[in-house]
Every structure is written in C-alpha cells, then in structure tokens.
Image (cartoon, rainbow, N blue to C red; front, side, top):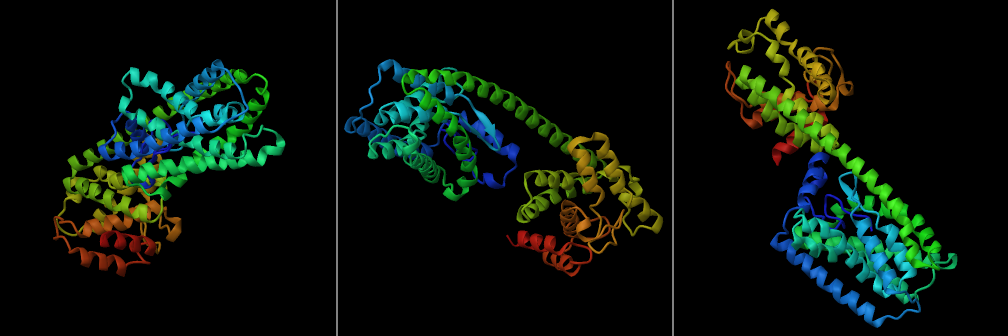
Length: 452
C-alpha cells in the first residue's frame, strides 16, 4: 500500500492538517512530520478505534469463514509479514506527503497466500514495521491503533478475490485482479476519509488531490508486483528477491528526504533573512516597518483568493514584507517629511524600488527573484507608474497585488502629514482608481477579503 499525505492518508502514522490545501508546501511537510510524533487527540483516538475494531472483526471473521485450496507453511507467512514490515518503513516523500512501496508485497500476498489471511498479515507487518519507532520513542505507542485503520486497504481486494473463488493470477483472471485493485483504492480512501472526517473534521473531498499521489505510486508498482507474484508461484518465499529493489527505493527515499531537509532549512533561512530585513526597515522608519507587516496579511489573503500557488504565495509574502526595503537608502528627512515632497525630493523617493531590487539581488536566490517584483510594486495598471512604466499584465501579478494592498494600508494608517481614512472610504478610492492605478481583478479580490 502506498502511503501517507499531509492530509491524513494511509502511512502508519499519518494525520490531517486543517486547511492544508491552502498552506505553503514547506509548512505542510513540516507539520506532517511533526504529526507522527504527536499523541492522538481524544476525538481522533475515538474515531480510529471505531475503525480499528471493525477491521479486526472483519479480518478475523474472513480468516475463519473463508476457505482456500492454497496451502503454504508458517515460514512463508513469516517471510511475507517481515517483507511487508520492511517495505512499510520506506518513506518516500512525494509532494506534500509520502509513499511506501508495500504494493510490492501486497500483490504477491493476494496472489500466493490464502487470501482470507492477507488482512491479518498486513496489519501484523505494519505493527512489526513500527516497532523500532515505538522502541526509540519516536512515535507514541498509542498511535499504533492507526496501523489497524490503515490496514483496511487489504480488506477490499481480499473480499473481491474470496468471492471470486481465489483465482490464480493468470492473464484470463486479470479483470478480477483489476477489480481487486479498485476495491483496494476504495477501501483505502473510505477508511482514511471516514477517520479524518470523524476524528479531525476534514472533508473527504479535500483528500482526493493528495490520495491521487498514493494511487499513482500503487499503480506504478503494480506491474512489478504482478511479475514478482508470477515468478514466485512455485515457491512463494522467493518474494524475498524483491528486497534488493526495496533497498534501492529506501536509499533513494533517504536521499530525497535529505534534499527536502536542506530545502526546508534554506526556506527558513530566506524567511529569517526577510524578517531581519523587515526589522532593519522598522528600525530605520517605524511607520514603514509596521506598514509592511500589515500589507503582508492583506497580500496573502488576496493572493489566496486569486489562486496563486504555494511558490507564488511565498514570493508574495516576501515582496509584501520587503516592498519598501529600498527606503533605507532614502534620506530620513525625505521619508519623515510632514508636508508634501518637492519634485526633487519625489524623484529621490521614487528610486526606492530600484534600490530595493539592488539590495535583494545582492542576496540572490529567492530574494533575488523577489527583488524583481519589488521593483514593480509602484507600477500602475495604465502605465503611469514607476520606475519602468509597465502596463497592465506586463506588471507581475504579485506586484499588482502588493500595489493595491500597499495603497489601501497607506490610506488607512496615520501618516505624519494626515490622519488615517476610514476603511469604506479607502476602499471606495481603490475602486475609483480600478483600471487606472490598480488591476481591477486585484481590487475586486481585496474588496472580497475586506468583506470577510
């Protein structure tokens, strides 16, 4: 069975992140990892027990009632359980979740063992695979109840094959095994969705985009697993020859985890640098610093409403925080002048976007890219802005969002030369200038955000 996503899919220690679909990918990954070491809440524990107990009842009943002509020794059962345990410990992170290659063992189990015994073998393998984590204290032992919940995926195909008379894995019987795969996915999704709905209040529809990754991994491994099953028909214990492949997958999984760890650390470093630069701006000019932080909240809300992806929302956050970073190069007597600026002073003031780009380009990387957005944060929709006179969609979308949110925040904040304007009045001004100064779609999204 392929595994766990950030919203609570079937890896042994998975769980759901509320609102994960709209959160940044790095936050999803980190929260998903932390969840594995967190004790179950009361509601989640009850929901998990409500699924674990029926699983045991159904699996034991299936093993006692159904009969099979397949005869294998205890050693073969032990080999399959141990192989499943090893496969369950391979955690290959994909997107915001992860996958385990247990499909390589599950398919041979269904093809070679008495099918009625497969669900109990699966849960035994998952429990055995979790023992090292429980022994080291990495995972609370109470979370082992999730191993039973996550074993429901084996019940679906077992039922299909038992009803079909436990046919051999031959080309003629491929439609039956295809139906078994469908039952595997259906029981997998059903148990996960029910647990997450009852235990965490998460809508089943929100799981689909994450479960697709799991099903894709299962389907990709299925042909290899079928070949392994066919090759082991005479001697089922030969399934151990799949272990080198699992070892290779484990190596790649570890390498990928290290790269993700480094990417997360780098992301934290960039965010820390952005916050530090924001503090520098605030120390130089208290209004500009606090104003920038206010703009961040508005920008992220509008970015979400306009459907920006996680990377674009990250850039929007940094651009909102740093859009005035270039003002640290502007003389204080201009920044804090209580009256209207002269033409010469205004010409100096307008250089702050270019200075901001230059400062951030010296840092490079993500912030270097954000610098190009910062440069355009005072461009107008009709081309009358600065410094490059860009028009309409030639202006980066993130810059258009920051432009409108920056103007709204400025109008609703006290300045040295005027008092703050009421929210309704400021919004009316934005709408009046929609299509000239501001992107109409951004103004509409900002208005919706303010309306709640």
